[in-house]
Length: 282
Image 1 (tube, helix red, strand yellow):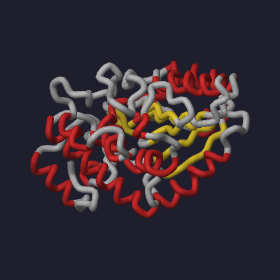
Image 2 (tube, one colour; image 1 turned 180 degrees about the horizontal axis):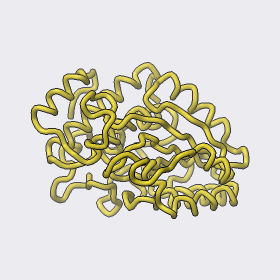
Image 3 (tube, rainbow, N blue to C red; image 1 turned 30 degrees about the vertical axis):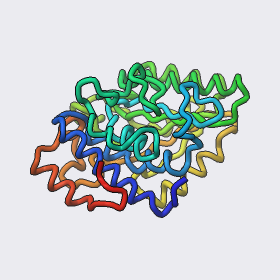
């Protein structure tokens, strides 16, 4: 577990990794990755119970994380490497031929830290509930964490999974919805409105919490609170407000950087807003 005071600096390094990874191959999804960097850093470096040196696919006896919105793989890979699952130098292979770091996380390459292939939107929550059900059956007291995109909630399978979790009282799962209100074709409201998420989840029988996912004080206040609600008889969801492109001013507040890589000049401008850290670039 990292010193809690180091987490913002680790997240800044993760953001540098994200930008350099997508720039190197002119491909990838920087916007949502930048927005979720604080949350994923908090989980992997402080709040999750996990062992990078002894990775298993089943995750018995430790917390399991499922990132349903697999297109934000750059943030996932950076956090996995920085927390010790594989060498950080491997980040330089992102999206290259024969890499283990595919555009969406996959399992057949055997990349430590990845338990399920994700990115077919709407499916990851169902898989996470499978892990949660397994832990219940095995009397395993560890937690399943899952992350979904807000545009992903337009998929019907999500709401089938939401009903299943509440019906089966899967109170060992903690889901965060990345509520940045942007998706590939525009704002979520323009594409298909997903308003009143707090009320929706509560109506479906979930214990629902709101959090600013780019505010460290709030992250450290809400995540322990959410963990304390585990075991209450209801699944737990955090509606997590983030800013797509967080940390880089010209990438924020727009869907334009959902799946667009920066050019050389844009990379330089972005990195200038994210000073080098003690952890060093890969």
